[in-house]
Length: 238
Length: 306
Ligand SMILES: Nc1ncnc2c1ncn2[C@@H]1O[C@H](COP(=O)(O)OP(=O)(O)OP(=O)(O)O)[C@@H](O)[C@H]1O
Ligand SMILES: [Mg+2]
Image (cartoon, rainbow over all chains, first blue to last red; front, side, top):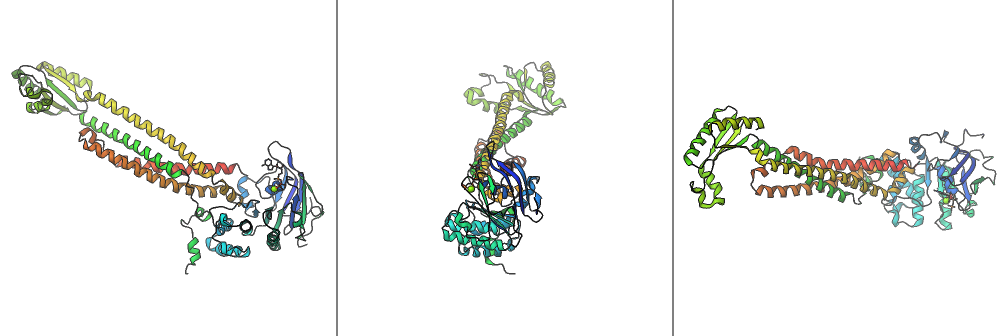
C-alpha cells in the first residue's frame, strides 16, 4: 500500500472471527489519514462495531496486519497497548459512564488515567463541560442525566484528552435529529483541530450532514469503497 | 496561593493516584461483614488456643518437680516416726529443692468434707502422713525409681507418686483441646481465605464495567488493580477492626469468668504480650489476604481482555 508514511491507521487484509464461527470481517484493507472525517455505514450485523473494536484496541484481528501511529499493532506486547489507547478517544454506543462518578469526574477520568496533575485538570474539564453545554450539571451522577446529556458527557470524555483518533459507535443513536446534528458539529469542531474522526452509523441521513466526510461501507463483513476515497485518499487538508 | 474552593472540594482525600481516579469508590458488598465475622471467630479460637497453651506450660512448670510421699501406716506412733525419717532422708539429698510435711490439721481440714468429724479422730480413720517434695529439675522415671528404693529401705510404709503423673490425664485433655484450637484456627483460616476471595470477587464482579471502562481509557493493569486494592483494603480494614474488637471482647469476658474460678491452674492461662501480638496479626493477615485477592482477581480479569 502506498502513501503509508503519513497515514494514521492502516489495515492490510484484516480478518476477524469470533471463536470458530465464520469470519465477520474479511479482507479489510484501507488507510486512514490524519485530520479526515470518516463515516462507517452498513446494515445491522454487517460488522461495524467489530471493526471499531479493532480500531479502539478491544479486539485483535485473527489475521492480517494493522499499523497505527506508525507502529505494527500485531507485534505490540500487551503492556504497550495502554499507551496506544490513551491516544484514541472512544464513544461507546452505550456511553459506559461510571455510575458513581459525577459528570465532572467521568470527563476527568482520561486525564487522571494519564497522570495529569489535579491543578491541570480543573480548567480543561470545566471548559469541556461548558463546550457541550453541561457546565450546570457538572456534579450530577449519570443516572440523573437525560439520554442526550449522558451522550454529551460520553463525548466530552472521549475528546477531553485531545485524542489523535476519535472512534464513535452510533453516537447519535439515542437522540432526536436536532441533537444528532448538534453532536456532529462537535465532532467536526474536533476534526478541525486535527483529530481523525471515525463515526459508525446506519443512519444514511447523517452522512449528508458532513459534506467533507469520506464513506466506508461494510456489507456482510466486506468493505466497499463507494466514493473511491479509501483507494485514492485525499491529501491532508483536502 | 489561596486555594480555589472548587479545587479544595474535589481534591483527593488520600492523595494517591487511585483515589484521584475513582474518588468515591466504595466497593462495599459483603466484604466488611465477612471480614468481621471471620476475624472475630479466628481471634477467639486463637485466643483460646494460646490461653490453653499457657495453662499447660505453667502447670507443667509448677508441678514438674513435684513428688508426693505418703506414709501409709495405721499405728500413729510408727507413722510419725517413719514420716520424720522420710523428711530427714529427703532433706539430706542435694537434688531435693524443698520438703514440706503437710501438717495433720491441714490434712484433716482437707478431708473433713469427705469424712466428717471422723477426720479429726486419728484412731477412727487412719490418714496417711503427707510430704510435699520438690525436686530440682523434672521428675524422670529412673529418678523416681531410685528415690523410691532409697526411701523404702528406711521407710517401709512410704508411697511415692510424681504429681505430674496424677495430672497426666489433665495434660492429655489440655493437649487435645489445644489441637482442637489449632484445628479450628486452621479451618477458620481456610474458610476466611475462601470467603474473602469470594467477597472480593463478587465486589469486583459488580464493578466489572468500571474496570473495563478504565481499561479502555488506557489505564494500565497496575493502575486498575491499585484502585481496587485500596478500596477493598479499606473495607477489609473496617471489617477486620470490628472483628478484632468483637473477638478481644469475647476473650476478655471469658477470661474474667475463668479468673473468677480462682483456680491456680486457670490463672496460668493469662495471655502475655506475645499472644496479643499474634492475635493482632490475625486481622492484618486478613487485610493482606483481601488486598492480594483483589489484585489477583483484577489482574486475571484484565488478562482476559486485550
Ligand atoms: N462477541 C461476539 N461473539 C460472537 N459473535 C459476535 C460477537 N460480536 C458480534 N458478533 C457477530 O458479528 C457480526 C457483526 O456484528 P457487529 O456488532 O460488528 O455488527 P454491527 O454492524 O455493529 O451491527 P449493528 O448495526 O446492529 O450494531 C454479527 O453477526 C454478530 O452476531
Ligand atoms: Mg454495532
